[in-house]
Length: 124
Image (cartoon, rainbow, N blue to C red; front, side, top):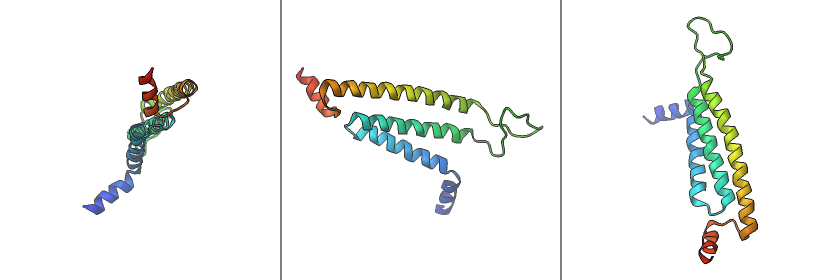
């Protein structure tokens, strides 16, 4: 049983890496008080989702969809690749907006710690 589990893990390393990245990203979002670290955690979580889409879309022995396939040959679907490319662009835009907000918050309050920001906002 253990040997088969290790064998599956060795053959599906992309899924294992995806779960590790997802766990680290989720932990960073939940456990850190610093807003920049939370933003880094969101980016790690997002990267795990990208890896998941690419790993699911992999076709063993498949050819690119732009090359004419021979009869009976497996072809990889281009849709997950398009989704990931679009998500990367949206992720970069959201990261830029998040960093801009972090800069404005720091300029206004002088801190990036969430608990300190809550105390300052409560006093206002």
